[in-house]
Length: 449
Image 1 (cartoon, rainbow, N blue to C red):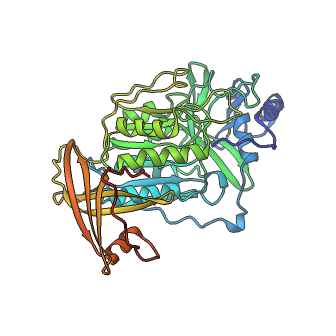
Image 2 (tube, helix red, strand yellow):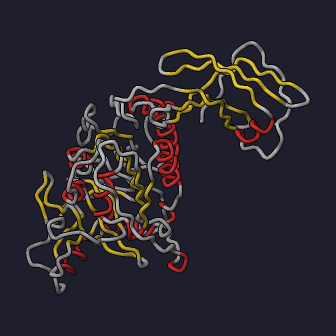
Image 3 (cartoon, rainbow, N blue to C red):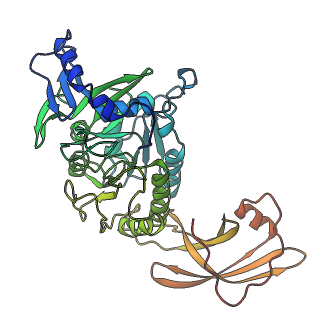
């Protein structure tokens, strides 16, 4: 994700492109005639079977990243084998190639979100970090999981110097990449040089290393070529820079059955992405469609990221069966989202059974949610409740709560009697429940998370 730094910039590395080109052409192991250039970006092949690349903006990110000392790196866990494709998959996968290595992309946020989604669907959450996050692990996850998160850095295959301090990543870009720490599983076919509308490039290549950390870039074609079966109508969330600057990631994966692909048109900030992720997935977990959740996301977070040093802001872009890719250069604008994808199969008619109220402490006050469960499928959901009355009985601290709830277009009046211990457990409070004064007759609308 983008963050301004005083360390060498892409412009500095662009000044070295001619010198790097001469070094490549003279080095042992270079395959003659394989070097291609797109602006200040270089690609070439080595006799070791590896496809290589030199991208000024990628080098900048290497040097500006806040690395965690090798002695403090976590040991990667053994990979978990996913089950075969499941058209109704409830499982979630989270990929974090640089977790524990690069502070910009070391957060438990996505693993926690994945666990939360899996808990909601009744599935499992698999987390792949560091060298476990290989191209084959990604392709397996896309084949078998309903939701996949990819938390890493993103790139395009082009960089041109311009009047801005950070340069032009997009105007001559053929494809978009996600970045891996491991090159395990990459084939010679993945790393072949191909022709694009703006020159030659590679679907996958080795971009170099810095402080014992490696950088392999792969696009959607490389990932799709490793998939042996179609995805189960799934959702891919990519909180990476430039993922939607081109159609190089979304188009091949959407064609392989990933129903919704989400990403950003330009460089995006970590803080804004965190807010967007919370606003969107809180709605999806409550059974809302992508269209509804995207609208909630825009209302709460704005229509694009705001970075003071970026001329063109990052816009969130969805691609689905009802949302075509806007087109290269047309992604830098607000998108009206139409996808009706939901986290749960729409064919199932839910019969909701009221379980009680859940209370969330938000900004010093409490918000109430009516909790329901469908006995047929086990799905649980929380719906915003308008509390109309709270009666307390002393000294037992018993409370009777009345609330109005709108559930699937129908109005309900729910009542729940709670003891002090019930409320303490549900609130997650360390202090005892205090007596509550009766509310005014006017309904109170609690704030949402």
